Length: 356
Image 1: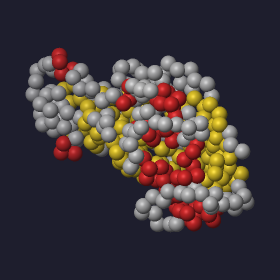
Image 2 (image 1 turned 45 degrees about the horizontal axis):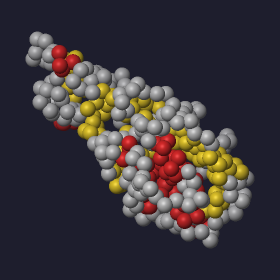
Image 3 (image 1 turned 90 degrees about the horizontal axis):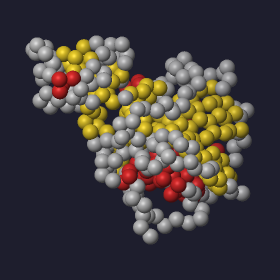
Image 4 (image 1 turned 180 degrees about the vertical axis):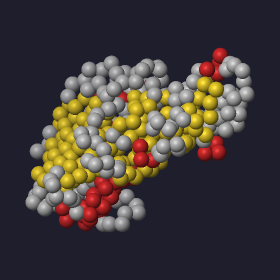
């Protein structure tokens, strides 16, 4: 049987949708930075009004990089450091300081990428068909420095196929081998723009687990210490579009009660590499502030859980035609959903796998 020729496996094809490129806290007002995603050089800046813009990086005049010499901003516009050609946030050339007239070709020669800044993240819209952006990213209730504070994040760059990462959301069988837990229940729900994982996983001291390098605590001991802990906890993980996973959880116990958001995202750098990021915020569910020790330890342990998956992804290859068994979860359905050509036209039923 020949593997399905998914569009995302073709050279230069990347999934359509919103892709995070920076956290808001990483880009100050008046700052210009270089980016490289989708095998393209890009430039990102925050203008004087606070507006964020992402443009193709090289000036259409003679090819200088707009971030050279640190970048030169004029209000909400950016000027090329080579000859002063100036572009607005849409990429339109608005000034050439030594010309009487802007050449017609120069007016729209530089591409401006659609940008959204939401929940403390900056994302760009990528669409091979140049369709307009869609509004599907979720809102975080009470988002802001007073309610949640800054994201605690950890970023890595690995050699991987982007779909390798998102397949985790349907992979029921990896929990007892990678994360050291036993699956109590597992459910996937597919819609046009979302794939949700509803799972309950019990810590199991007898299960194997992957240990990421560089941890300053004993991950296996922490798992075993918490095994059997009485707490009322729930949460679900949802991929929104092709690359952004939001996971909300609440936990209440006699000792501590908290709510937390985890955002894990992957953005294609080129055909072979992805930029991975795990970001976490946590807040108290009561009037009592969370202990400093907990606030410091919680993000570290969350990043370690994501790091367990990264340890596998960075060394695996993408199997275009995998041999699957009946307990593997809906891997092929996920691939059809992810495919940038087909997944916007599918109506997919809920797939449920329950384990006793």
